[in-house]
Length: 481
Image (tube, rainbow, N blue to C red; front, top):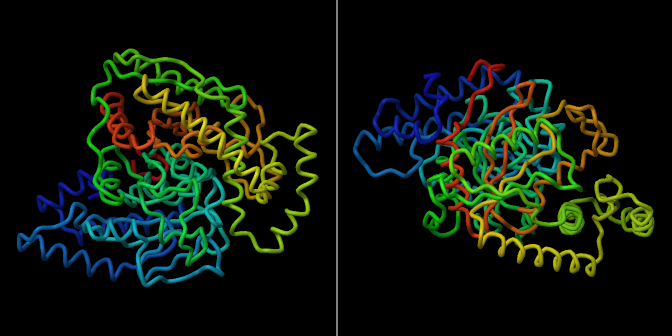
């Protein structure tokens, strides 16, 4: 059974369909794996085993009768804590928001309708607002590759559970790299969909009861293979999956590589891994072009003025008023050279004016048009996800944190927003895949960015890359690889 848990969701579903394993048996194995590693990894925050066991038995009974079943029938799944799951606790890491919804989030309901057996919730940072997954309710999630390091955030518990073989499919969310960063840190796959493709309803943030979907934010799949991403996205998105838009063969594929960006620091070992991957693509017959698609500093300034007001919507009114009083000093700080990577510059954007937001939106539209033109001659653009590999736990206040690159250089913690900004600001699809490791053995991933609505393209390319160069490799530290 341990070998079965190491397989991707598609292979597990094939085992279920052929009755080599039953849904109850697979569920029990997943739960046993969770319990065996929980003290080390702390990825799963809450469970409802009895309800899941009842559902799994029902699916086994239906399958024995030869009845038609959904595409995920009998597959055990976990869901990020910020998404509502019927009858299970959700909190977004805050006790005051702890709730048990009577309804699934829309994306969760779609997975359940396809036959998924949902049994657990996975950990995250407070209000999904960090690249480390810890909170006062559930504690700290650890990276299965190195327990002293973060699995990323905000879908960090999800990525850790995938890497450790606890679950084969997850649903997470992304507004600041929250699907892509954990995938890179844990060596798994994720897909940030085109903005609006997958319904957000039933996720907190925004606050419970909100009717409007948050700008920039997306809900998307996480898995251990590209084919699993395609499967889950096809089930949770609104409308049918578009036809395959990219060639399945690497030969002749037109690939842009974005590695040189003066505004974005990058660990030399991460850069070397991405460069080596690009060389491998060229060796396999892809047409590879190094380029700088946009001005990173201009992009980042606009992205932060779009992002921070969304994040600030959940601040207590007293904090918002305090930031509003500091608006003048914030502008002065930027004028004196406190760049967008400084923490003070970022948090004081919580209260940008409507004119400032409109300017940022105009920049977003202009960059979006530039990317549309770029993708008329390129199939995909590949780029780093994070400036560093998984870093050690650091729970100090944000303004005290820094990141240390392998050459000893320290960079701002907020540099985690740099490479993920393009796809998020412009609403583009981005598929994260593992491509190797640094000298310490920590995973490194890249994002495959495509044109708006080109989700089928980036996923098809991701699958081609995986088949050519290899995909998920399990971590040895947990004994589950």
